[in-house]
Image 1 (tube, rainbow, N blue to C red):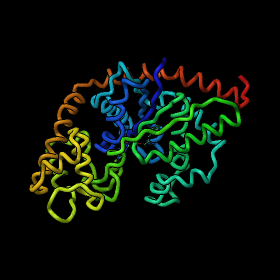
Image 2 (cartoon, helix red, strand yellow):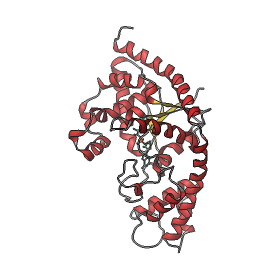
Image 3 (cartoon, helix red, strand yellow):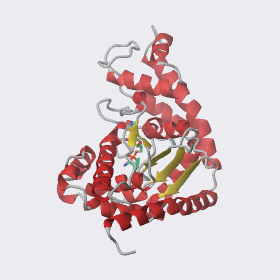
Image 4 (cartoon, protein in one colour):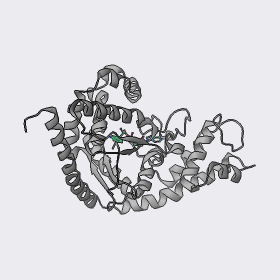
Length: 328
Ligand code: TYM
């Protein structure tokens, strides 16, 4: 029996942080044996807010290297760049014609992002972003989409659009399912446990980038906000320490209970020291692998893979165009 397919992606904008890693990329690494895996670097999504062209090119390569250094095995999984497969934009256009304005107006990510700079300056691309994401997923008959919680509303839209298209034009798309890792589906900011860790955060103290130096990692953890009281406990009413314990737990493989027991009677200082060591145990070898990757080789791999997935995407688009009624 052939393996089920998973598809997911990261935008090449801002710094890839431990929230992206624990919420998404780490799960991809774990799932790549069980599933046929396609991981995309979604540069068409990145330009829905203004990007410097050279920086975008540099970030695109950076994200590809992050995937590889984090343990995505190019022999098992296919990583490629979204803009190198034109069918994504093509399918997004067709899906636009079956998507309601009001469905997109409800998207919390659009509301958040457009509120930041004011609705007046929000672009149509930002509004339409979830439809492009649906196209990414549906092009490849994806069954499972491993993401962080903030993407679930977009996946729900992809499910709705797949069903709607199938109903109107006949069975064409697989209806995908989202896949979350409960403990890390929403890693919170180190500077504010009420907000999620985010690439576009105003303060760098919000997140730990996978490419931060060990000194910076140490500094950021030292400055991370904690709750009142001085003991290490795990509960919803102590969200800052709960978030740090979740991070500790995901990197170390220890359960929150084990961590609480380990730090019983010890203060935040000692806990943060342990957390720093645990995070660095991942980050240092990760960065060594990252630096050993050669740009030209990665660029070549991405191009080859784009060709490979193009044939899947093209077949699907031929089917879609035929069903919609385009002359072929
Ligand atoms: P992006 O680039 O914002 O984030 C990449 C992945 O990281 C997850 N994530 C988090 N998980 C836990 N805690 C956090 N604080 C946190 N911040 C981010 C995100 O949920 C995501 O899984 N629209 C998507 C990219 C995309 C995509 C797709 C994903 C485009 N097409 C098709 C899946 C399938 C995005 O902007 O992710």
